[in-house]
Amino acid sequence: MDPSFSAESAWKIFEELTVNAHQTQQQVLQEILTQNLHTEYLSQFLSLDSDREDFKTKVPVVEYEDIKPYIQRIANGEPSDILLAETVTALTRSSGTSAGQPKLIPFTDRELDRRAFGGCLRSSVVNKFVDGFEQGERMKLHLQFNRPEIMTPSGFRTRSILTSIFMSKYFETHESSLYTSPIATILCLDSKQSMYCQWLCGLVHRNEVVSVGSIFGSILVRGIKFLEDYWKELCSNIRTGQLSDWISDTGCRNALSMVLEKPNPELADTIEDICNAKSWEGIIKKLWPGTKYIDATVTGSMVQYVPMLEFYCGDLPLVSKCYASSECDLGINIKPLSNPCDTSYTFIPNMAYFEFLPMHEDSEEVRNKKEESELVDLVNVKPGRFYEPVVTTFTGLYRCKMGDILKATGYHNNAPQFQFVRRKGVFLSVDMEKTTEDELGEAVKQANLFIGRFRLHVVDYTGAVDISSIPGHYVLFWELKMEGSSHVPELNPGTIEQCCGIVEESLSLVYRVSRKGNGIGPLEIRVVKNGTFDELMDLFVSKGSSVSQYKTPRCIKLEEALKLLNYRVVGRYFSQQFPASTPLKW
Ligand code: AMP
Figure (cartoon, protein in one colour):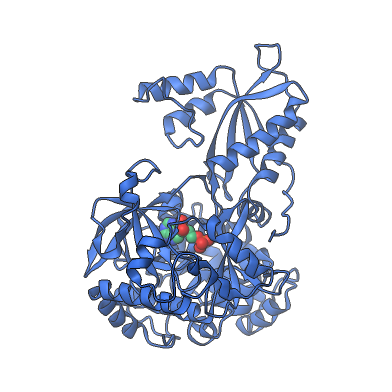
């Protein structure tokens, strides 16, 4: 696939692909099989003359964990053709975790071409709605951040999919000039310096900016909070044409020397006037008057940031452009100006071979065993039904469940469209991290063991996310009991603060990295009065839960339940230090 084609030609190709969705899917599967039948993984189930039908009857539907041992062997230095024929150039670290560690997914040069096609396609859709968005004429203020590369013992780079894209020739030649952030500011590993410099460049180019955004809504909200804290210093840099001394990153300093060419007191005055306003309601449109849309994914767990973004961004449309993952690009939003709650993603038929596992609407179970053996093809999904996508990629995942729940909403040509419902098993999420009920349970168990020394134990607990301050943080409501006493125990604040730390240490590496990078605030434990969890049960029973089947929800979203819990809080305790982020294990 030629990554250098224009946005218009990408759209034309997409139209053909969606009209011929079935044939394209057959070709994709054929190509993957032709390349990879000899691999150790596939040869367990298939022979060299197996065809697509054999694939569907003999290759099992698996979880990432089933393929992980092969990827670990590659990370440890075995030839990558145990899993895939294409040369592996890096391992992508995803925000999804396996045993607390980021999942690793093989990455290849051809995968980069596919991602580039996805990028062109997204631009082509947006171009249809935004005029004059040609290179050099209009720019995107898109906050993007790099994470450090980590080497495996055998010398593979592991990095996020975005880092692979930023570091590619494709990005340098086709994309980077569209952004207000010079590449050096994106690649800077100090997120504070990176953020500061990216805002500075965005402000200097304020009249050329056509979209403001970041990959996810959470990051943009955090960015705006940063701007609230730093706008005076940013204005002073613009006024004097001098970058603050604390920006020590050489790449950033060099890049900014080209942007801050000379003192610009008029611009500094204008920005100061705007930022000095009593309220920051609608600030984005005031600071960047040419902004046509906000470019940030706000579907799924990011929906919690919509009210804040609406406050800062006024009536600018919030555009969630795509449904993508470290595994592969999956879908694109072809109606970018639609309301976030109506956003559907049209699957792109040449990105991978897609199958769909039918799900019950409100449970994580498959509908029934028979249906599991009858995965649905891309072109056969039924609007109104819920599915988990199962992907077979060019990069070594074969019939691997994605862990997301989607609702089919319709078709574009012959390609289905889906709303993102939620990630399976994820209960708490503030930033890019995703914490499951089991992970939370294990973390609380560790803290419970610790307070056992003080004859205390957790009677019951639940969790919530508090994004009223930025960055958001996890809140755990704990009902505690002292052995041999029925009263609220006397608590030593230091002990419960230590519990906050123990919980954080026990959460996934992705949580800890995000916490260290200030993407998540200190975890909080709110101790509640004795009997609170009985009252919580009464509330849920009054709403229709059956007493005999009641299980304490481990994540509370219901406003009334949160009120009940907060009303009974007797003490609030916060984690006092950053958790250690241990290195990745292979
Ligand atoms: P990662 O592999 O770290 O890029 O994370 C991919 C996951 O992010 C997906 O499996 C989804 O759970 C989530 N995700 C990706 N795109 C969207 C979207 N448009 N809306 C909601 N969640 C998304």
